[in-house]
Length: 311
Image 1 (cartoon, helix red, strand yellow):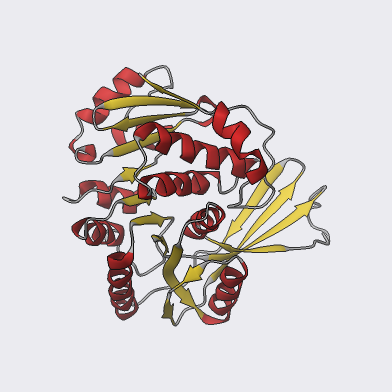
Image 2: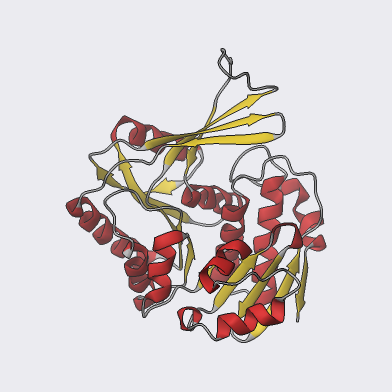
């Protein structure tokens, strides 16, 4: 079983408009999805045929509706209830642009967080792999993910962490490291105080090796937009290039990539297969108008076109 964690889930509501008219009425037909990065991961893993359980925090009427949306997607879930109302996030697709309106979400009490951690530890004991994705809600300390990583690693389970900001900083500073992190090149440059480009991979590798925060992380995968990705795995550097496609909706592609990584790692795949599977999932998501959903009929073509080269 793969356990996915979404601490700040949302009802993602997409509005498709030919043109967004400011200061006037825009009539729309909404598409509602159980959102949050971890739930995008969950949906893709269901498509890949994995046994998945989603967990995190849910509250109020919106939380109950999120449960219904997960049921409709075939996602098994065991969330911890909280008093606050789960959030709604809007994605307005117009004229080739995406305008997002993101609620911050509820405030979580110390007692609610303690109850979640007990639930999480129980689920980790049953899991083969854990993914932790997205932002932390208000009231949850920045080191929460670091503590969750330790629970998983102490149980001998690989844990993939996809977050940023203070939560990532705390996890990098902790003694127990995640199995995989997936920052983009801008985020890595911010962490290193550098300005590396896709042409500076040897220097980037050296900088990561010289920074104690990254010591002990088996997988550091750096995404580089149209330039693909570079992965540093136990002393080996891998360059990944995905095929050029017509992008329909890039939202959730990073989460889909994490799902592919988790699917392959849980199956005991080798490094090249982990990277090929993850990048295939990310590419197939970008080809689908739905978020956290793959155009599975294109799997063979895209999978065969993803290039993974050991440098």
